[in-house]
Amino acid sequence: MNLHEYQGKQILNSFGVNIQRGIVATTPEEAVEAAKKLTKETGTGWWVIKAQVHAGGRGKGGGVKLAKSLEEVQEISNSILGMMLVTPQTSAEGKKVHQVLIAEDVYYPGESETSEFYMSVLLNRATGKNMIMYSTEGGMDIEAVAEKTPHLIFHEEIDPELGLLGFQARKIAFNLGLSGKAFKEMTKFVSALYTAYVKSDSALFEINPVLKTSDDKIIAVDAKVSLDDNSLFRHKDYVELRDFREENAIEVEANAAGLNYVDLDGNVGCMVNGAGLAMATMDLIKQNGGEPANFLDVGGTADAERVETGFRIILKDPNVKAILVNIFGGIVRCDRVAQGIVDAYRNMGDAIKVPIIVRLQGTNAKEAKELIVKSGLDVISVTEFEEAAEKVREVLA
Image (cartoon, rainbow, N blue to C red; front, side, top):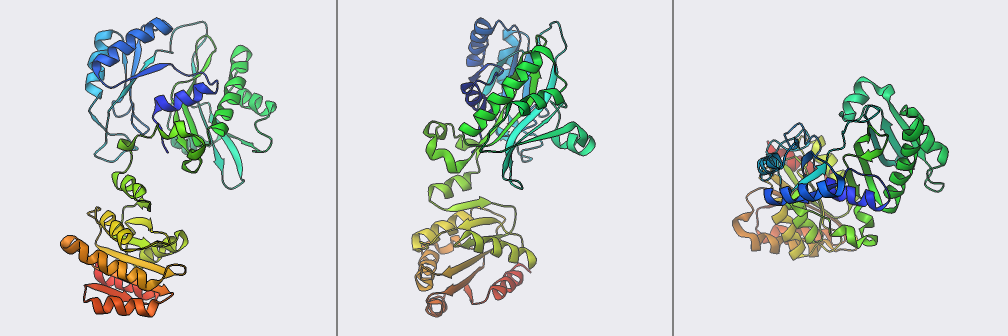
């Protein structure tokens, strides 16, 4: 589950991570009041207006701007709120901005130069260890840094059973070229950041940039946080942070219906029971010239209502040119699934305008095929996996 910057910062701050302070606003008037309040609390005289959407590269799209007066706060907020923000991480259509973060100016003058670093915490699945990835090249696209100057990216792996050790935090601060007060502040920052990552059950923390201020404080200026959906039962308060406006509407609907659905870019809709079979089905579709339009696991209760819901969700994608239903009947009987398909097809009437290929194998597969054939519906029934893929290729030709 992805969070907005201001939400991610709230979590970071709750674990002792120093952050760039800010107040979220949904109207230009609220933005001005937020700026006034922020000035009283922090003394800041300038404010950074940041669009709050689930996408990086906001500055490149005009979603991050500096305001030097309250008039500019209102003008800039008014221009950003409601805009369709297009960044390298959004579609060509962009994402609508519903709220902005009014943040304090942290690039104030002082005795030393400011420095920007990149830092993220995530799981290295190859080693089964957590990893802190960091670089002196903060504020830039980390992908570009990795491509052009890979020697400037460092990794520190952490054994989950031991946790982050003191020497590792000091090593990170040393590799970032820090000394004195900034060195000590960075070790504290890294320790608090790792604690936040573990205790919040996150999948990713990405801070770009981590800033060394002119008076040697270390703060998170940005925060990209992705929580592990499987751990949300332990964090009821985090569940409330979900912003469905930022998520794929079809996936949200499918999730509400209890279906495991992931939207893809292809032209063949898939309805399968079991994640492994679903992955194999998508592979076979691709091998036969098609492109899967979705991952949809209907689970072991593929009754008429569930099948109909699955059809309706798949057909919301205008790119779908055919649907492949691939069910292996183990616990669930194939004839029950077949009846569900027939009932769903009849209930939906003219809503189904694309060919449907059905492969039912396993318990009562023979009876299932007879049910579909006798229904007289425009459904192509097959037995073998390869045959199903060939039919997909034929209907797409």
